[in-house]
Each structure stands twice: as structure tokens, then as C-alpha cells.
Image (tube, rainbow, N blue to C red; front, side, top):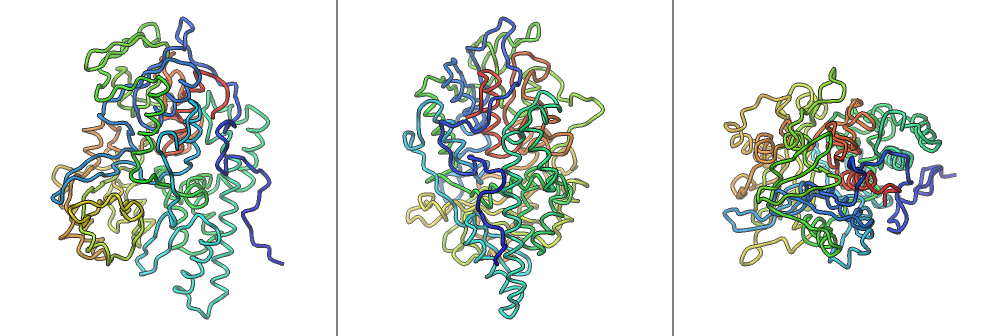
Length: 561
């Protein structure tokens, strides 16, 4: 009898594992405290920031009848999930300058539904990237990550044959069985964690067990090993160092090494590897643009290129907000989606944990090289995928260097993104002979590292390009035309990100769930709500969208849709 785990319903099926009807709440109403002005008002809401969190909150608040104004410092919407026009020696091109891995698009569907719109109404169409990634290993082998279970099992069979030979069917079956077990386990973790922990905010630690459902889910997570080591669980299931990398590298998003990360963070890899990675028709910025169109059509006012410069606080409430161009607002409630350090500076309040004995730990940062390259060069590369992760051999040492010692990677693992692979409309030039490319290299943040970026950026970029060229990306060094390089220093100087990282606070135990900065009464201000990467649930595209929904719920009450 075949006892291999399948994708059939688990003990705790959840409707959000499939694309939901937007009219059905994703999470149930809770007894969280609501946010009001001292006069009791909540009708007039100002949102600082037009990224995914701010737009998510704006749509839900407008759908609930609130008057909403969104103020954005940049000239475009999208925040850390935007597309900008850059210029290289090859000409102008569109570059995805923030997140490029988009999961759980049903959250966007639900946000749009709050104002009675669908993605089709605003010209937004998602397609699943198959595969989501290609992993390249120093052994010369590669492995494509598919969200379809059968396709992934076939890919693992191919991978096992190249690794162990066709005469080792037992090894092949072992890896396939281990993958199936890990997939089923990660799905169960996600199912138990979503409603009460992932799509949730907190007034205190007791909210972890505030309802029978929450207490039951917490106990179930403990029973299935979700609070052990992510690396240990992956090794137990998969038993292959290369395969394990593809299912644990996402811990870097949480700012910690797989060995130190709690196994519950398998929810991140579950989103990638089971629920799927998606992409709009042309560029990642289409998501925020579509949300902004729906918000404006519903009556939300969005100000672009006009940063907040003054916030007047009296008796524990924000009384007025003034922008650089002189507009003044007197909101009942304010939602700030800006980086925690930017919000602290606007409010003239210290950026520190509630418990002063603790110190904030920030996630590693990144160097991101944006440029363009001739397509006749890329045709010979070892990967023709939208996303390629080029793993180094010293995987564990990489995390010690980045997170522990604040050093540059000695054997770098790198993310290469080529959107024109799945969106041919991104090709440019007289004969469409060029394509955009971005290369992300994790780097120490400014809290851990002591690098002098003004002097090391150029040689480090050349080092990264040389490493990739040695790993098979032939012609990269001579053919890449660089348009922009983002570094920890530019993240800090140009965007104000704390510790120079766009990934905000790491998800250590003391910075997760009820211990992460709470979204209510932030910085001691009664009518301020936080959303975005620095508060609950945390870092990542779906969690940021959820944070906007949770911020709106602090004002409207009810469930999160």
C-alpha cells in the first residue's frame, strides 16, 4: 500500500489554502482593542505611505465608509514592491526595485473586493511562475522549484538521477518521499498558524491563547514540531544538503539562519513551494498601481511626491499632519506604514523596544545591482528562469558571516532576477536585444557591519559579477551595463531604513508575534496604528498586505478580509 503523504485535506483544512471568495473573511473577528481619537472619532484617516500595506489599509477603510487620505513621499506608489524607470548605457528600461517574489495574490483580490472591484476591473492579471526558482549548486547540478506536487516529484527524480545515477532507485524514492512528507508537514504548519498567528495582531502575549481556537492551534503547532529548528526538520524530512537549501533559504527573509530559525517559518517556504510564486503581466509595480486605481476610484485621495514634514502631537494624540507642499490634515486616526526609524523621526520619539533591557536586532541587508544586458549573452547561461538562486558551498558559514560577525560573504549565495524571461514585454532596444537584470547579494546591515560602502561598493560589485561568471554566467562582467546599485548605506541615506536594511526587524523570538512592535498605540500615541514590515505579522509581501488589513481592523473592528 502506498503511504506517501499527498496533498489531500489535512486534519485542519483552511479555506485560505485555495483562492478564496473575497466575500469570505480570511480571519475571524477578534476582541482586539480599537483605535480612536480622544474625542472618539475614527472617520477621518490619514495613511503615511502608499506601499502594499498602506493601499491594503486604504481599500478596506474606504470600503467601510471612512474618509481616507494616503500621503506618499515618492513619486510613485508601491514602496518596497515598486517598478521604476532606470537608465543604463543600453537605454531606459523598467526595473523591479523591490520585492520580486509575489505570493498569495488572493490577498490582493480580497483587498480590491472591499471596494467592490476585481483584478480584471483594474487591469491586473497574475500568472503562476513555473518553476518559481531554479537553484544552482556548486556541484554543477540544478533543481527547479515547482509548486505543483507532481511536477516537483518529477524534478526531484531527475535531480536524484544526476546525483546518484540511474542505478540508485532507492535514493530517488527516498528524496521523493521526503519531499512529500515535508510538503504535507509545511502545509499543516501553515494551516495551524495562519488564522491566529500569521494573520493576527496582538495586544499582549496572552492573545496567543485568548480563544479556544488560538490555544488549540498553538498546541497543535507545538505537537508537530513547529517550534524546533527549521534546519533540523528539513534535514529529517529531506536528507539531502542541496535539496534542503531550496526549502530553507527563505529563513534569510526572517533575518536568521535556518539552524536558528524556528520551524514555524516553514510557512514562508510553503507560500513559495506549494501555494506558488506569481507575477503580473509586465512588472511587479502593476500590483500597487492597480490597488491605487481602485482606491482612487472609490474616493481615496493619494498624494505622491509630497512627504510628511511635521506631525503635531498633543495629549497623546496626533492632532495635525503637514506635508512638504504645505497641505495640512487633522485626522482622527493615523496609520504609518513607513519604516520604524522614519516614523520615529517624524514623531520625534525614540526608536526602542518596550522593554529597555532588550535591543532591536535588524535583519541582514543586501546589495542589489540593477542593470541591463544583451540577450545574446544570456542565451548561454545555465538558467533561463525568472528567478535563479546561485548557492555557494559554505551555506552555514554565510549565515555566521552575515548575522553573527557582520562580515561580507566569503562564498556568496546570490539571487539573479530576469523578468523578461516570463514577461517578453520587458525586452527593450531597437530590436529588443536587451533585457533588465537584477542581482541581489545579502550583506551585513549597518548595525552589525563596519563596511565603508562609499569605497567598497564598486570593487564588491565587480567581485559579485566575477563570482557569477565563474559559475557559468559567461560574458556578465564585460556585457552588463549597470544603472543603479543599492547598498546598506543607500538604503539608510536615501530611504531612512533602520540599520540600512529594507528587511526591517529580524524575526527572533523577542521580535515575533506579540513581542514584535505592536500596531496599536505605537510610540505611546493613542490614535496611531502601525502597518508594514516593522510590526505584526512581519516581513514579506503577503504579511505586509495583511498588516494593512490588520491596521484597518484596529479602526473598523470585525474580521480581516
